[in-house]
Image (cartoon, rainbow, N blue to C red; front, side, top):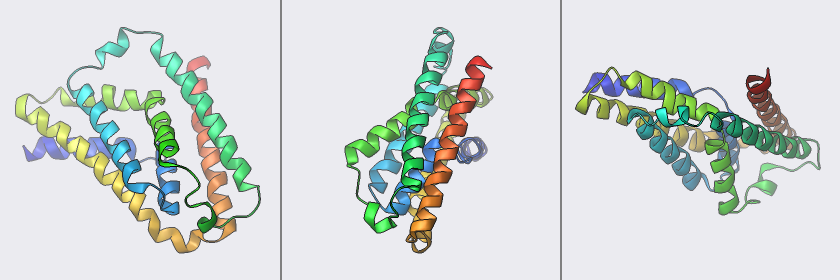
Amino acid sequence: MLGPALTGFATGLSLILAIGAQNAFVLRQGLMRAHVLPLVLFCALSDAVLIAAGVAGFGAATAALPWLPAAMALAGAGFLIVYGAMRMRAAFGPAEGMAATGGAQSLGRVLAMAAAFTWANPHVYLDTLGLVGAVSLQFEGSERLAYALGAMTASFAFFFSLGYGARALAPVMRSPRAWGLLDATIALVMWAIAGTLLWELWG
């Protein structure tokens, strides 16, 4: 049982480790110490639902809806472009330290944006419903369950580490210049991901 669980953990961690739109958002909220617990729980539980669906073989459902990937790509790219513009505007706007922006957004808005970053990203379905589900096919019964739990554990470990580990950077991020640089970097990441989605759709 340990082998399948470790395989699931390694697979799940490798897929979410790269800095993406969702991870950048969690990092920013962690730096601000704003709604961190509900945010990381939402992200980890969303991953758990998708991993469970992938391991259960639900990935075949996406193949039955050929229009769905394109629709998700357009929605996700549009959201990322707008959010990136917001962050770039903040980067070049009036200088504000971390303390001035820490509690600016309500919990509802933070979770709504987390939902968009998570569920409007077609890559998350490829990773969870596709790749995680595909690797699970080598296991049966209780071993497949252990694999799924291992992958879910990786998501919880990653998001909690990212959200709360960001606090170690808090002294640096009290500088308005450092905060502006982070916002500009996040904007570029968002636009790059949006460009990738649109390129895959029309390239």
